[in-house]
Length: 200
Image (tube, rainbow, N blue to C red; front, side, top):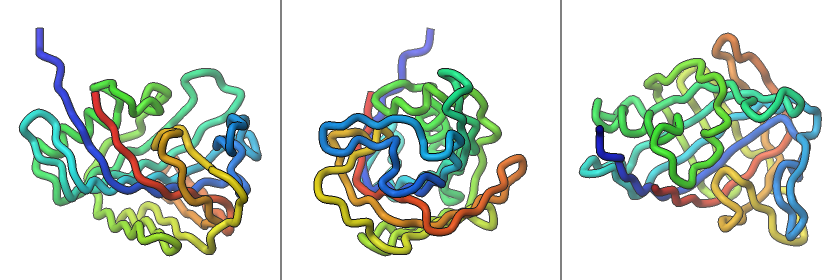
């Protein structure tokens, strides 16, 4: 039986989706999140790993992005996603990140347990700018997102994907994904930026 692989990664996080700001899925202060604005959530997520490793494999400096969709009423296993891995990753790094972000290694990256349909895991040119207030995601010709402006909110906002112990900044953001079967584009919806730390 294979020994379980251990990992620890940390860095910056930015996402955009088609909900209205503040995204109702997020926790606002002590009020837990609920259903998405429109029942169907289309999204683009991004992670910039500033420091991390799986076993002896260094993962620092690499990026990951996930594009996908889910419906509030389908059930527990509701997400359909593409996982994009930094094209500069070596094969061991690609394999490690694929395992972490597809949920094979467990840990506190809990959202991956809901990936009922992984449409593909593939290399991509991922360009991320996680500078506060001007966050952008560019995944080759397949997907993009960008902050339009910060959304002013009196209190703390947190998201379950980076973890509710990592509150951050809500934004008005735009996003586009064109990678069949995913195809959507939204202007001035919602976004969220913070930091993250995952491990098992």
